[in-house]
Amino acid sequence: MSDQHLGGNWNYPNSITAGAGTVAQLSDAAIQMGMRAPLVVTDPALAALPMIAAALERCGAAGLNAGLFSQVRANPTGQTIIDGVQAYRAGGHDGVIGFGGGSSIDVAKAVALMVGQDCPLWEFEDRGDNWRRANEAEIAAIIAVPTTAGTGSEVGRAAVIIDDAHQVKKIIFHPNMLPSRVILDPELTLELPPSLTAATGMDALSHNLEALCSPSYHPMAQGIAVEGIRLIKEHLPEAVANGHNLEARMQMLVASSMGATAFQKGLGAMHALAHPLGALFDAHHGLLNAILMPYVLQANRDEIQASIERTARYIGLDNATFDGFLNWVLALRRQVGIPHSLNAIGIDDSQLDKVGKMATEDPSAGGNPIAFTAAQYAQLCGCAIRGELAS
Image 1 (cartoon, helix red, strand yellow):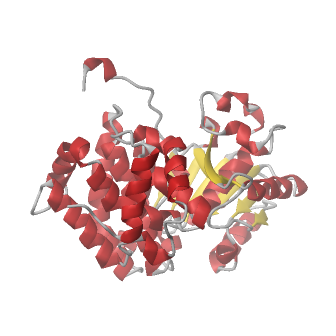
Image 2: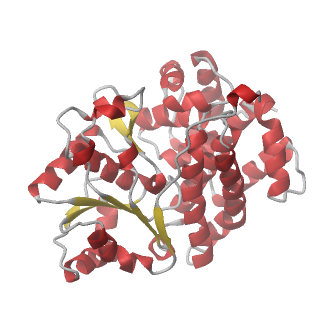
């Protein structure tokens, strides 16, 4: 890398409280942030579990008039944000608590942004300086409580939302969408089923990996990404096999936050393909990244081999080569139950050309080490659909 590229604007995350049982500090955190009537944003399945009832009860005991918005779907749409804003205003709320997986936290952040804006959500798509259009003073305070270890949305300044009218995932961005407080409590993840533990854990790996491979200059993110990969290697198999292992659950929460901290360095082709596939086929984002991972690594091989080999040595692989690392990824996927092809989760090749075009237009494509064309993205996606990994 030439000296002229040694520079950048770096932003690092927020105040994080980590450890078993720390969710008990939620009401105190809300009060410290000036909230008196927070809106808890989550999904229907989580809303039915005792942890949400307990959180609302704690808030009530502390004198907070907490409300609940639980209409979050796996791939949230613009309508979800409209509904959340309506719930916020109707309840007279003064802050947002995102409680759940990445979709819930993304919705919470987008709702917090939009409660004080007069223009449509899509005005804040992450392009150019769109974020400067926002009325910053009216963005609501945000607390994030993740219950999955994958997206790392709790340390991010953006939300991924589907534009219903155009069937495309868009990244909504504002610096003040970064939650001011984060609670990482591994006890909240103990009941996450093995399949979701695997898919979200591989999502965290994709974030760390794509940050590692991005050509952008960001040494701090690079170091975080490498250590995040090591934590996932050491702890994801155990978290899947023994979901009640608190240490494994804690380390995966940390690795997830690390991945999203690191990926301000950039993402890449995994996400550039996963976003349109998720929008078109309503498939789980983490599972898409997990399936796409080896195909994208192989396609990027010529540009990332040195970084991958350094990482292979750091995480202690016996075969510290690119092939050794790729074989570890394939073995890890098998161990935690990730399918080898997109076809195995019901994705066919009927929209390959559209996916290829959408991938080139996705902001994540800008961080890929190679600028693939729409045809190359379509070919790459086709290989992943058929399960054909080039040697």
